[in-house]
View 1: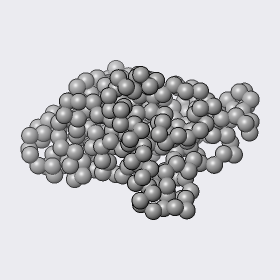
View 2: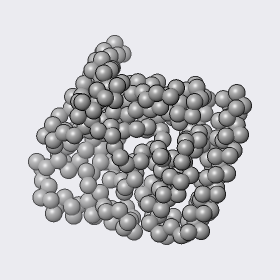
View 3: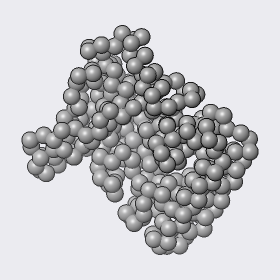
View 4: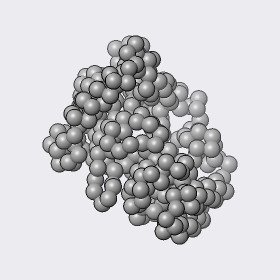
Length: 310
């Protein structure tokens, strides 16, 4: 697991250009349900990771947010990735539930030219596509928004990107395997940390994002991974900062574990959310002014922490 929001994926994120596809004419729930059924039937065999591997999917070795789970991606050509096939996802997301690996969701990635429309995707306006620049700035730079955009423009120019080049990618996640309290097309899945911790998924229904993040700290190796992710993000972490972060993380873990056996979803979520907020505050307190600028550019104002898979 490592720190921070899903958009980062342990590297500097590209600018998000648009977030939602235009609604189609047919918005009937029956048509939408039929599409979902087709996707579930087409991907049912990938409940067995061995089948996914035989179909060309491979595990992503980068640490991902705990509320995404384990990502397996499909190696395909740019030409193939420029076409959307709902029955053939670009990536699969696995989660741990009851000690087993379960297919929780799928992801679609479609390459776009500069003047291409957002993919239509599923029937109606339910799906929300994120459109991003394919290549962002190098890691380790003292980033700000203007610099990030300038680097992206420079790379497009050096690469000869034009109207026929795939300079953008549209992404959509669909949680077809495990019901998501925030909806099937949510960016992340708040129930996954609960399932991994051996708690009922229904706990997520009574909690919020802070509670889910706090629950994710129960994963083995959480604090060690948090420290590594912090170093990757700020770029110039000091030894005393890492020590303070580790102590704050361990304190948060202790609080969450103490509430684990309460038998009450509300009591557990309150403790997990409180521990998470205190941990965040402790981390912000260790940041220098320059580090805070860098973190807020990469993650947005106040958007610091989101634990990741170890």
